[in-house]
Image 1 (cartoon, one colour):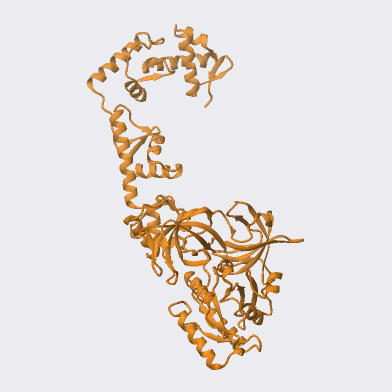
Image 2 (image 1 turned 45 degrees about the vertical axis):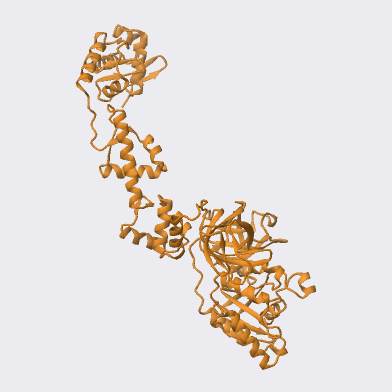
Amino acid sequence: MYVIATSGHVDHGKSSLVKALTGIDPDRLSEEKSRGMTIDLGFSWLKLANGNEVSIVDVPGHQKFIDNMVAGVGSIDLAVLVVAADESVMPQTIEHISILNLLQIKSGIIVLTKTDLVDKNWLELVRSDVLEVVEGTFLEEAPIVDVSVYNLDGIELLKSAIEKELNKVEIKSNVNRPRVFVDRSFSISGFGTIVTGTLLDGDIKVGDELRLVSTGLSARIRGIQTHKKSLQTASPGTRIAINLSGVSHNQINQRGEVLIAGDWLVSTIAIDVKLCVLPNISRPLKHNMFISFHSGTFEIVGRLRLLYKDIIMPGQNSFAQIKFNKPVSVIRGDKFIIRSSQVTLGGGEVIEVNVPRHKRNDQKVLDRLLVLESGSDNEIVEEFIKSNEPIQFDCIKDLSGLADINCILNQLLLERKIKNLDGYYFTFSWWEDLVGLAKRYLSSQHKKYPLRYGHSKESLRGVLDLAQDLFNSVIESLISSKVISEKNGLISIYNYKTIITGEQKGIIKDYIKFLETNPYSPSNDFNINTELLNKIIIENLVVKVSEKIVFSRSSYEFMLREIIKFLEVNREITIADVRDLFKTSRKYALSLMDYLDKQEVTKRIGDIRVLREN
């Protein structure tokens, strides 16, 4: 399926040409019929001799309706430039050529209409005028067909030319990210909401759920039609009408809404672009000027930020940033037009979306934009990884807009330009920085707390600022590569060993001796450093059963054996039994038994404890 569009000055016979080709009058509005002038987009279709069907978009030629014209030619395969032989080249002839050229339309045909109104000499002069204005544009080598819709001369030749030129057109790419720029939304009794537009970048099928990007509303596809024929599945490059359920046509913008399958497209309020300024405009473009931005089927006001100059002269190219007054739905690679006061100023290509405000005259920004604009696919993907690392596959695909991401990533991995850890991609320098940061953090913690074997993983995750799933993978990698060690859920620098001084060893000996002076009711009056206490708890020299009660290891193990013996004989034990068994107070007995419950040695049932079954 192909889409072509007319272009050219008002009253040069575009709509009449479409009707002669297809038998369908593209002027659908009563005002268009009464005024004899196309105001809005018109649609029809044509079946070629080779069996291919072609959708035709008829655009208005009047200067006042250029905005509508731009909305109709953004997703076409071939442009038909119409020039009336009795008038020759006119202002909108030139403006339409400029717009098509800025949108990087690759294929075209020039049609000289109303040839029945002029003689051969005049026709040759017109042909010469046309060749002069298309020089240096995509139409420079385009075929020229002479046509009269009055007597139908040249109509069959034009159909053959369309067929021949479309055979050269590349098939629209399918990157599994379907989207539709809506050009019409209406309701039909008995069917409900209908939207029309050209499908790009992926397939859709009946039953799929689509999302309106601007509002987030979802709708399900009840039916798909093209050229009044029902489809189960539509492919990229097809003009379609979609019957939607779950949303009213009043909830959909008449023109400019974007429908997508999935949630891959996120609206943006700032984009980086490569801007080409038309050579025939009367004044330069200025930094921070307001412009009207056109892409797909939408139009929005934006502010033009020039990154390296205060002005751009007519005919010059430059990188720039455009900041919008509300979110828009564009992606890298989309073409656009900018206008002001009904004058087309220039256009270009979106290089990146969702961008930060750049510092002007920054060489690093320029270098990055140069790579994203003209680098190889590998260089572009590597650049996106560098600026967004760590980054997952889907994000790389969405940012780059490239189809063969798997192949590119595999090549970059083979060349050791990037690393992959459980689906996250990043550069070696990022990884080295991450490892260095982890080591510095743990080293500082070891220095601050020399008696602690290790530290919590969560504290390190806060320092590294990583998503949980990636952090878990990073920890595993750091352990396997012997950068860090893990013990009892705590992490440390690999092979880190705590050092206890002779003075501290003496304190530990005195502390344990102090606990054993009253082994079953030990006092907490001994002044021991918290870090040192935690150290001997971890090393099982003492057992801390509650916040304020610590037993020596030997005392605890004796009490544990005696309690188990008691339970094996009596089957149950009370706090009073424990108190009497060790000639201690209820406070110590209760703390001990609560601890044994937590250790799953005993189980509490009301006021008694029993041995927990294995």
